[in-house]
Image 1 (tube, rainbow, N blue to C red):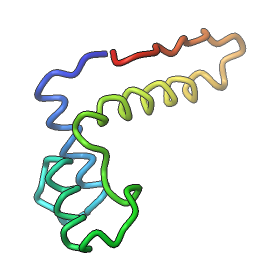
Image 2 (cartoon, rainbow, N blue to C red):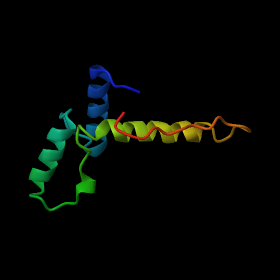
Image 3 (cartoon, rainbow, N blue to C red):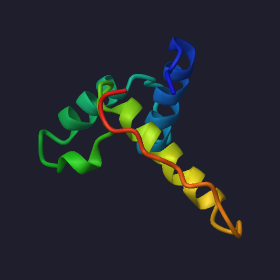
Image 4 (tube, rainbow, N blue to C red):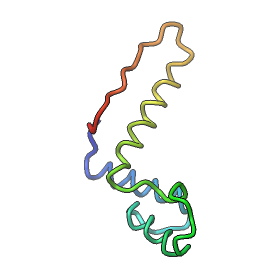
Length: 87
């Protein structure tokens, strides 16, 4: 699963809205920086969104998990193979 620029921008904007409901920021890197700056570093990294480099991996993992859940009620579900690596 490769991301087009448009899909990646949409994914970033959605992720930003998950971490901050009222934000107009659509870049996860910028939102993470603004969150860090506003709390003056007094927060854990789990409270900030993933960076742009990690966002595709998080999205692919969530997509994979959702595919497993969707097949849960099938009597003989197809076994999904997770891909390993940067791709």
